[in-house]
Length: 603
Ligand code: ZN
Ligand code: ZN
Image (cartoon, rainbow, N blue to C red; front, top):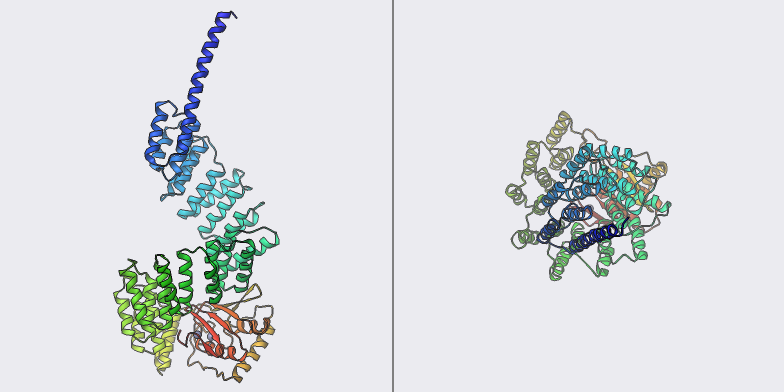
C-alpha cells in the first residue's frame, strides 16, 4: 500500500469516527434528556430532536422513547402507538413497552391485542415481561380463556420455572374465579419467592377462602420462609373474616418483633382484625400507638365501634377525625350510621345521614339506606322506614325490604311485614329466611293460619333453606360446625359436653323456648325447627368450653341470624360458666356476658 493511500484512508477513517462520535454524544445527550423528562410536551420536543439528528432508527433511543411514552405519567399511549409504528422490525422490548402501557391503562384489552399481534406478525418471541404484562391485562379484563391459553404458552415457551411469570398465572386464575386452579399452579412451582407466597395468601383471602389463606402461612412456617408487611396484612384480613383471634394476636406479636408496627397498612389491618374479632380495647390500643394514620385508620376505628353498637364512641372518633383534618368518606358514614342504628340513636343517625349528603357531598349507597331503614325500623317507626325505601333510588333492592321485614319481626307488625314480603315476592327475591321471618311474625301474633300459609308457600315454591354453620377458633385452629354435626373427630366428647352445658344453663334459669311451628327443610337453622338443641353454635360453644381453660373468651362466627332459643341459651351459658361469649352473626355482634347480651335482645 502506498503512503498516500494510507493517508487518505486514515483521513476517511478519522472523519467516519468523528461522525460516529458526534452521533454517539448526541444519542447520549438525548438519552440523558429523556431521563429527566417530565411532561408530554418536553417528550415531543425530544422526539423532534431525535428526528432532526436522524436518530429515529437508533434502537436504544427508539426503545427508550417508546418505553417512556407508554409507561410514564408524562407519556401518552396514542403517541406511543405512533412511535411504535415507526419502528422497523420492533424487538420484544418494544412490544413489551406497549403491552405494559396498555395493561396498566383504562383499556387493558389493547394489551391482549398487541400480544396477539406480536405472535402473528413478529419474529420476536415473548419473554418474562411479555407474559407478565399480558397476564396482568387478562387479570383486569377477566379473560379466562386467554388466561388458560397464556398458561399453555408459558409452559410451551419454557417459562414454567419462572417465579414472576407463574405468580402472574396464579393471580390471573384467581381473578377469574378459579382459585383452586391458582392453588394447583402454586403447588407445582419448583421455586417460590416471598412475592408468590404473598400472592397466594391475598388470592385466597380476596376470594373468601380464609382458612386456606391461613393454611398458606402454616406452610410458610414449615418451609421457614420469612414474611413481610404484605404477608401480615393479607393474613390479618383473613383472621378478621373468620374471627381467628389467637392467630391475629400471634401475628401482632410477629409484627412487633419485625418492627413493622409503624407501617400504616399493618396498623390498619390490626385494628380491623381486633374490631372484627370483638376486642375493641386492643383495637383502640393499636390505634392510640399509631404515629401515622390515614383515612383507613380512622374508618377502621369508627366502623369498629359502630358495628359493635357503640354509636356514641363512634361519633366521638368521627369528631376527632374531622379535627385531625381528615375528610370522611362513605365508609366512615356507614360506620357511624351502623353505630347509631345498633344503639338506637335515631336523631343522630338522621343527622349524619343528612350531613353526608349536604356537607360532604357523598352519595348514600344501598348500605346507607339499609342502615336508615333499620334505624327507623328498630325504633318502631315502621312508616318512616317504609318512606326511606320508597324515596331511595334502590327501592328495587331486596335487602331493604328484607331489613324492613326484620324490623316487623321485632315489633310483631303483621301488616307491614306483609307489605315487605309482597315486595320481595314481586322482585322475585324471596328466600327461605324471609318466609321464616314472616312465619315468626304470624306465630308471635297467634295466627296459626298465617304460619300454615308460609309453610305451604315454601313447599310449593320448592324454596331451599341456607345451611347454617358456625366457626370457632381453639388455639390457632378454626373448627367448623353445621347443625347436628357428627364429623368432628371429638364428636362424642362434644355431645357429652353439650348435655352438661344444657343442664348447667337450666340450673341458672334457662328454659327452652318451644318452637311454635316447624317448616319444611328443617335441617337448616334458618327455620324455626322443632328442636334447636344441636344448632351449629351450640356445638361450637360446647367444643369451646371443653377445650379452653376457664375464663377464656369464646369467639364464634355464624353465617345466619342466631335463632331466639340459641340467643337465650347462650345468655345463660355465659352466666353459668362465667365466660364472655362473642357471636358474630349475619346481622350483628352479640357480646354475651353474665346472662346478658349487648344487643339488648334486638337483632
Ligand atoms: Zn339456633
Ligand atoms: Zn344478642
